[in-house]
Length: 65
Image (tube, rainbow, N blue to C red; front, side):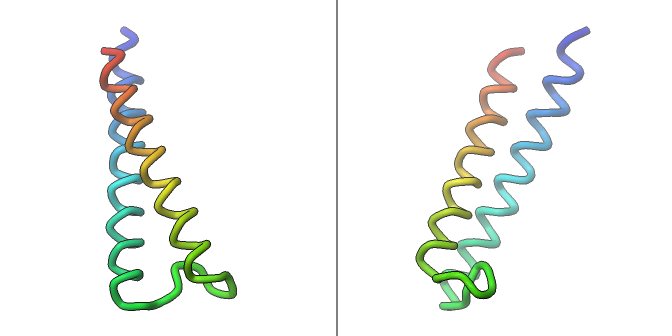
C-alpha cells in the first residue's frame, strides 16, 4: 500500500527536477537570466542546485520501493 505514494512522489520530484534543469541549462546557454532582477550566476547556481536535489529526492523515493 505504501508503494503508491512513493511512486507518485518520485515521479513528481523527477519531472520537476528534469524540467527545471532543462530550463536552467537552456537559459544559461542563451546567456539570459534565470530569474529577473537577480545575479545571473547566483540564480543559475540556485536553480541548478534545486534541480539536482529534486532529482536526488526522486531517486531516493524510487529506491525506497
